[in-house]
Amino acid sequence: MDRINFQEQAEEIGIDLENLLSLYNLFVDQTEGDISKMESFISLKNSKDLRSTSHHIKGASLNLEIFSLVDSAKYLEAYSESEDWNQIASEFENFKKCFVILKSHLQKVENE
Picture 1 (cartoon, rainbow, N blue to C red):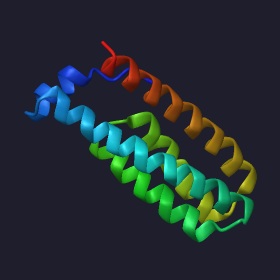
Picture 2: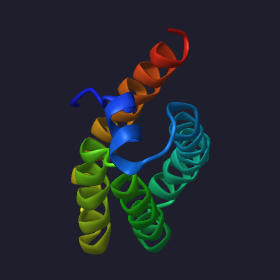
Picture 3: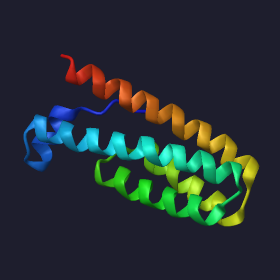
Picture 4: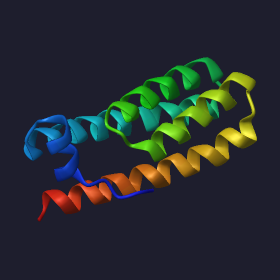
């Protein structure tokens, strides 16, 4: 996952860093809940809700230009469509790793 330059991104979209970090924190909070739901959807083999949640995350990630999560959510959405549970399990692990990296990077920036 590429490191996000929050200051540069804030300048590009014309908001201050504090507001951008608030948007990221909102995304993190929402996505943590979504991850819990996705774990349940996977264990129940509920492809419809998994696909819908993946689509939602893909859009939110794209808005914040978190491209590693965009790509992973896109794959989860596609694998859910075909109900490829082996690929779903593998990609979901990748998604969670990318999310942890994002969350860690965000916390580091906030503590600077």
